[in-house]
View 1 (cartoon, rainbow, N blue to C red):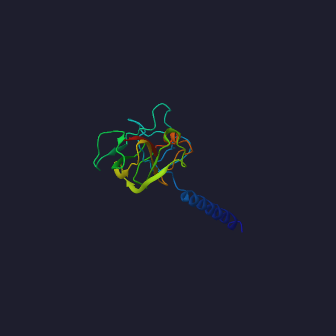
View 2 (view 1 turned 135 degrees about the vertical axis):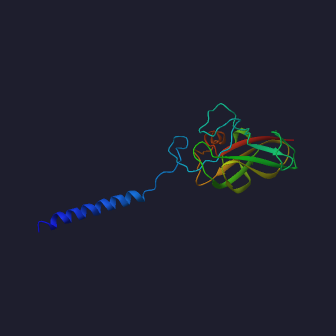
View 3 (view 1 turned 135 degrees about the horizontal axis):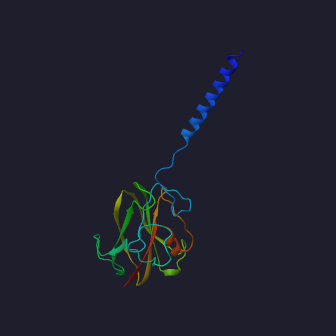
Length: 199
């Protein structure tokens, strides 16, 4: 009798220890991702586009640089990349050439998502999403490095046209996205803006 009690206690203790260890092993360990903008959003991937030359993708960006002239977006007369310009001929097919960069500053690894493109004639007062019209989208796999994609675009009548580019991926969520399009570009390395003068 005196020997059964301690053995039973040891057996129960071992069972509890095994259960605790099994539970700990079932908890997934975090990968190499870090906080996106230090606001508690963890992402295993980070594809970004530059808001201005030299933009390294850290968010939120400072309020100083303009957020309507992304160097990662060009409109060219052919599908071959051309020098940066902001003039686009009306009623003629141009080609939007967009560069997506991976890895960004918050994580590494191939990402799969959708590049969504929009336009508006509302200029700097454009409200997201009500003032923007879709120009199309592309499902893409973005490996490490720079991936360039081409989208045909026929601009309507002359005037200032704003275009917006959003990388949408469940593995790379937005840091913040509200109705202010300018702030959306400032706070998300997934969002860039490019204005064109249609002539």
